[in-house]
Length: 117
Image (cartoon, rainbow, N blue to C red; front, side, top):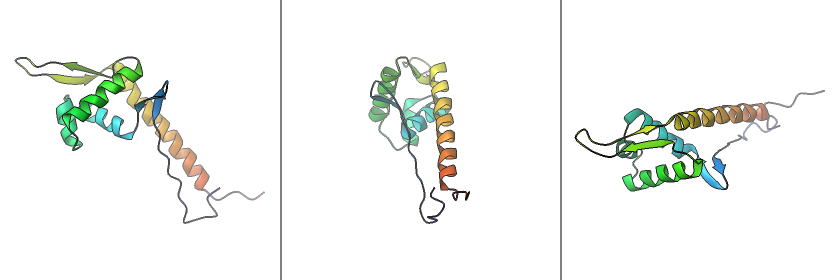
């Protein structure tokens, strides 16, 4: 489709919503990935040059919009607090990546030259 326009490129952005509320998008999935790796909302926020308040707001919004928690938070104590992805959170990241993979393939197919019949 775009194959006859070599200087044109197809860019696709995707997000997942439930009842009109955004659950996942590129930035949210990046935040979840950092939380999964670092086990901390604060550390994840720092990795993204984001305030803790903003990161916490996004986590709270994702948890509410998804209908179940994607991130579980433990409050501080002698060992300090932390955050972990729930099974739903891990599944959500995997699903989002599958969606992106399918969209990338579809976009690539549209960029190929149209076959002549």
